[in-house]
Amino acid sequence: MKILLLGSGELGKEFTIAAQRIGQIVIAVDNYENAPAMQVAHAFEVINMLDGSELDRIVYKHQPDFIVPEIEAIRTERFYDYEKQGIKVVPSAKAANFTMNRKAIRDLASKDLGLKTAKYSYATTSEELKKAVLEVGIPCVVKPLMSSSGKGQSTIKTESDIEKAWNYAVEGSRGDVIEVIVEAFVKFNSEITLLTVVQNNNPTLFCAPIGHRQERGDYQESWQPAKISENDLIEAQNMAKKVTEALGGAGLFGVEFFLTDEGVYFSELSPRPHDTGMVTLAGTQNFNEFELHLRAILSLPIFEIKLEKAGASAVILASENSLNPTYEGIEKIASMPKTDFRIFGKPTSRPFRRMGVSLVSDDLKTPIVEIVEMAKKASKLIKVKS
Image (cartoon, rainbow, N blue to C red; front, side):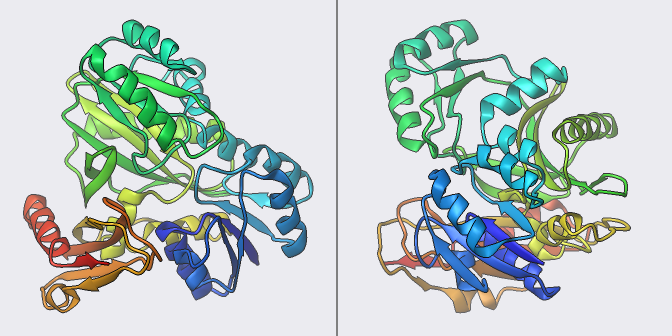
């Protein structure tokens, strides 16, 4: 099968490796050369994926069996036409369109499906943002409708933060839609990602919940399994199944939830492998999240997802701008027991850009806090240099 991968970051790179291991052909696409997935794909294209005519051109050129989106900034409305041409869009054209835009997925979850979410509103100008903040209340969180890895996300704690939050959201937006979502701040005890695997002719499966910690709207550490009560887990699984069934298609979805004293709140959903799910590269499961996504896409039956180890991941961040980043300390992290790492191969760096990840695994009896601390310690051993 031939797969057209739209977005070629670190998640796309691991997906490409998984696909090649079982004989699939991958064409990696992004808006810059030498993106991580391009380095391991069979072929690549450099285009602006918000240009519909350019998307049409490469689809016609490569005639893929599957189109697999990995980022938000894509002219996703074209996907409906591709499905009519007989191309399988992952998970589906509807799912890709709804989940690439926070407005569509939030309204689906809250208004159509009745899932419990934070109070929210939208704004298209700084003046509308002021009104939305008054409606939702302070503190609140502001996010662009289209962004990833925390870009453009900020917390408003006082009215003086509103203008700055608007400017930052516009700057961090990945698409061509200038609109933000304003969410009431949920007093949560923890956050989890529930990797949900939807299969074409087999039951929906769930990975063990993944906990994570964020800074600047982006994850810093993730761990599996996360602590969660049986009642909360059942509630989260029911919500995840409900929303993925409404979206249709097959593949792995990363569904995020807040765990609170009042129960589980739906937060966000990604129709693809999730950055917090990179912890599965530590061998925590019988299949990592990229292998699960691929098998579900190809309709290869997945008998079970088995948690085999406890694990944690911690990000390796750049601290400065560079057109040719290099790495120090690899021999130090390589000498640590029960530890592995990935360097993504991004051709440039900037402050806080995620350049790699450390991975630690241990026996399921080992306290997860100890594993997380080891992953944090490991990630600090590698320094990104210009």
